[in-house]
Amino acid sequence: MAQIVDGNKIASEILGNLKARVQNLKKRNVEPALAVVIVGHDQSSHTYVKKKGESAKKIGVDFFKFEFAADTDKETLMARIKEIQEQHQLAGLIIQLPLPDRLWPDTREIVNQINQEIDVDCLTYQSLGRVLMGASALVPPTPGAILEILKFHQIDLTGKVVCLVGRGDLIGRPLAAMLAHEPVTLITCGKDTKNLASFTKQADIVICGVGKKDLVTGEMVKKGAVVIDAGVCFDRPDGSSQEKMYGDINFESIKKRASLVTPTPGGVGPITVAKLLENTVKVAERKFVIN
Image (cartoon, rainbow, N blue to C red; front, top):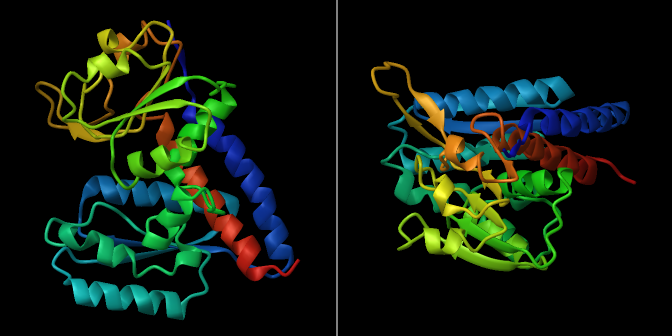
């Protein structure tokens, strides 16, 4: 049976370290602040924002939430994003994704309204370029959380075959760029890759970030593999009126074959929030403190 990653424990250690750093900033009269822009009424998105706010409060980071109606037009939203940055001294600004369907095609243009120096999600063109070149001072939160898990559990990457399933901007694309600087053999796939199992079975480490329930099952990974699930989707179990959160993997079958596996929830998610706040504190230290 696999060892199950305790994401809350890892996140707690990161947040504990950040709390001490925030206290040091406040001694220098610096009040680090993180702002989140959220559009629409998607319940899961509001839940994620709430968790970010709670974690920020734990470590002493000021947290601002700017809510906009689902029918807000692109021009209004972009103008308000610029105003928020002008009116507040921020160490971080993020736009909670996904945006409502009517704005989704404009996601890249909207995200690029964030000043690169406070882009703690690392999603603007400038930030992604720095990540690609291995020259970013900040680490994209979810890829950072995945690498944090490997580091915490002392998984040596040297010579390993890594199968990365997912090509999105939040996880797959930046993580592939980061792994390109590691001594691994990298296989990249997507949810529509034909015969996906032929690739995942080769891997010592399987990382999923698609958002499709049961995309990877136990028979698709080799015995002793490390399996990290960063995908999130919601579904109603048979006969239930309540939505339940799932990842990309079939956890019950994979935990019988893997050596290490992340659960959903409680795996990558809490660490992602901690890494977002770590970026925010880094920006505050660099932006407001003269060494």
